Length: 305
Image (tube, rainbow, N blue to C red):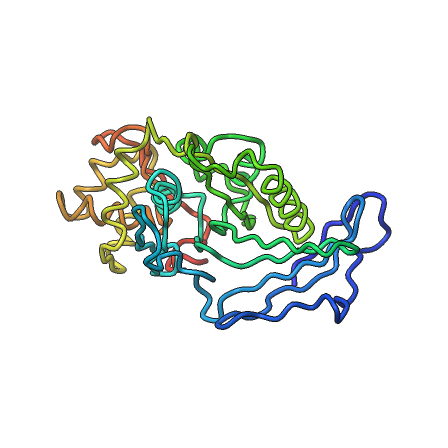
């Protein structure tokens, strides 16, 4: 179980057994991951987190009832799973960015169902976050401070990591989302943010404007197209040795990996797997900077110390 950060005015965490009358049962193909009675600033809240038994999305979204584009995006960072999306302006570009963002270690769409109830109230709040991402702590702090997601991805460098990974829950909002100004919806998100904070997790809302990718769109899409290209131990050795050199560039890396097109495809695959980082703000030109990601947390452990 995660450690609970304490409020300044509390001597110990409020973490008793959930009263029997307030216990919630998992639905089919779910299991209870966390059941807690939490003391918030002014009230007591019972919270249950239900996750899928198979470790994947708790709901698939794609059910044949939507009258809009939906789909699935294959992601290495989702454990080689196809992640469901229901918005081409919101969730889909967010997945593209997460797959290519060096600061993002893991991704899961529709990670759980959160049920919340304020003690003394008959109303239950049910919330499904759009995604759970594991990110470098400094990157998560950038998001929590209000830096747009695409800008945080573009500005991130491996040297900014401090070796600590944090969990972030994400709500992706499109410009046409009619719920954005509904008071009850905003109240539910506020309560969810407080619950996640007590569990030691961050929570952010990512808006459509945060996913514009004006400066990095070409690089994100091109690298993402080759996310599933196979690489072997020799490719890893060659790329790591080259990227460790001062002022390594993409043109030289491609030559080391066999030239175009296969060298570029392998470079992209190694970027997604967090072995190295290709600069995203230079349209993948030959002089684009390449940096080694030397934190021992590449996907999946091929460079672990």
